[in-house]
Figure 1 (cartoon, rainbow, N blue to C red):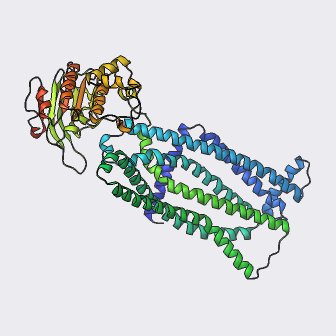
Figure 2 (cartoon, rainbow, N blue to C red):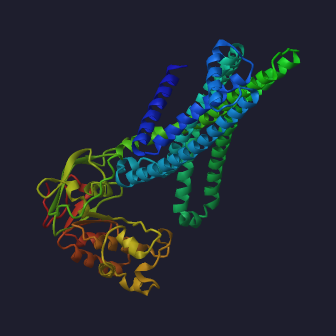
Figure 3 (tube, one colour):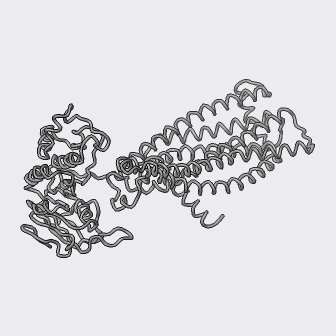
Length: 575
């Protein structure tokens, strides 16, 4: 085995060990499953060992086993004879099957609970804790796969791991019994298993390579599907349906072919030992080999060997599934660690009120790109309206994310009031985007999104954005359910829903990032003065390309002249 393979194996063992420790800490059901697993193994050994007294073996190795079971029959007041041994075997094996069934059911339940908990944990981490700088560099398919397929695989890992333990131990138990029964048969079977193990190890490595490629393809597929769903209007307007469908068809064909190859090899791994064993048996029989054994001994040997190969077949199946799912643990364990403390939510009650926000010598850039902000300093004051202008890509929206605490600067600091940390005021900062997200629920829920406010306050916010009459004219008013992405609203109405959503929360600092670009001039002249009056005791920042909006501001921050920090100022101070 190469050093790279050894390192990979050690890494897999380390990841699985950490994952099992996590399950043991957080899921009490893990312990009954372990107890049942041990009980199954004890019963497996007991049932298989009954093959020794059933046969005519009288070897020294078998003497202890025979003596034990004779003692059991004596306590049951039964005569040691083949019928009694068979009866006892069936009773013990029945108990083993019952315990095995319970173990599998509880293991499945444990896996489902792990899947549920991890999916919820990772979704919560992505929503609340994952750095936006990292989110911006990853595809949507990455996160869909992480919270969906990968957490499902983590739940399956528990079942596969325990099944590997049970089946491998079952095979080892049968091998030990076989050695006690017939050393010659033991060495023959061991040699056969060694040949199988070498072949299967090679196929396992091949499956791991295929599975890595399949995981990448799965994420690309998820991304393509979501992007197409979110772009249906553009796709149809451009008559690009055939192009999009053809690309997806090529991707799904490649992915399904990869899955087929994985399944074909997996099935081959399970079938190979049986095929090889039958071929060897056929060769031996055709060669005229002679056999001398009593019927009972032959039955015992046959049962033991069947148990060995049945268990090894199950072990190979579970092991293959375990190895193909291990990659999920590699992706997920870091997120388990980062989310163990739970997401931190901004608390409006404890958040400090903002009198001013100071940006001092901030540098920011994405990996592999030029710096977007370099040594940028500015101060925003309460009671002022600011317009941030400049060409696309100059860093206006990045500045908004830094002000909101969504992107930490590479260097420099953002503070509020007298040098307090930005996170102390996080709950009092809000952003309205150019395309606010509308959810497939009621207008009330779209405005609140977990915030608590009476309907009167919602109607007031709708009045400020000139939507009150429109919503009241709808059949269900605030209870009207909006369609996917708010397609039953116009672009301007969606933007005004987004602004109203912010006004309901009465922020100390509100950033409008091209949030009125879809409004006609008449509506804009109604909405913006209302928003300015509502924010007269706060800080209003408008990111815009519209010179008319810039004229309404007290201060204009021009990103074409960002080194000078501003063009015109009435009440703001450049730091």
